[in-house]
Image (cartoon, rainbow, N blue to C red; front, side, top):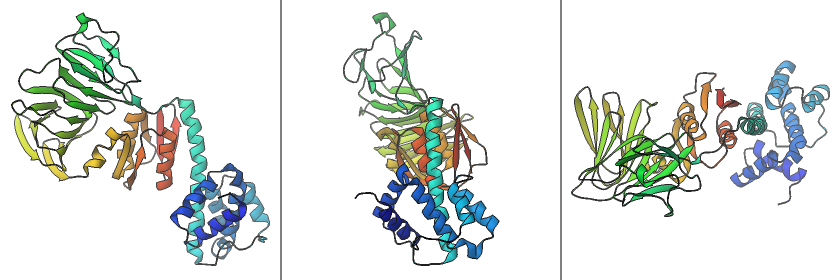
Length: 391
């Protein structure tokens, strides 16, 4: 549909009457995102506000409210203060004054946040913050550290040969470098995949590492830190054990996710398929739990609790998404910090309000922050590689 001022006025009227459909609302956001209609939108919001506000608000209160919607010293605000007579056709059938003001402020806040998002894009560009991708390092037994190709998605270990997932050899490795164990690690903003000698597949999230042997003799054991998704190859006579910071996970053949970052107080193991035994070691004591698919073991200190969870939310990162299921802004920013390699500074105490939704991890940082700002009254400012969060 061709964009016109008449159609814009119709959409604003539907919005203020609270009769707008989801499809029309999306179309209205498209108008707001189009700089061609910026002046018309400001004018319409100002007219709508002044047709109801004078009844309830003083002149000072009107000016303060409009400054919340528009930028300070906006010509539309100044002109409305001088000339209060509306020459436009009424935009909507009159409804409750308080509700109308609330809706005008709500639409204005979206417009204000859109403007903020544009400045966020500039801040991200100036800071050089990039979206995460395939980044990892391989440390050999002789402590030689190799930066892996960012054009590849993972590596595999076959017959004591290290190869990329497409079958090509890793560069920079001599036969003398090959040893009995290796460490694959991802930095902030990195993710990578690994296929172990037994065929077990491991996906590493950002800021994670796994130490593994060149060959498995008997029971299979690896050491892990961070977050990873495991698809363990079945070997009924040989268990598979993942050791990570005060806990171990033992399986025969299963799919599960581990989140056990050094900078977080809680370790979580989530089972998708099969069975696992989670063991907590604390002050010489051992506490174990058997998990069923759809359950998550959460360990904090000397406490081990089991919950039922939505496993798709837990492993969304593996498929390239942030999934937020009733998560606070503090929890969300912790995830963004690892993926975009940034620091977080809460100017105000973080709100306990929760978010629910899904966002692609391929989006730029400013796009993600804009989505969050649309959902809740939160402000973001980027200084260097630090995101300042305020209300």
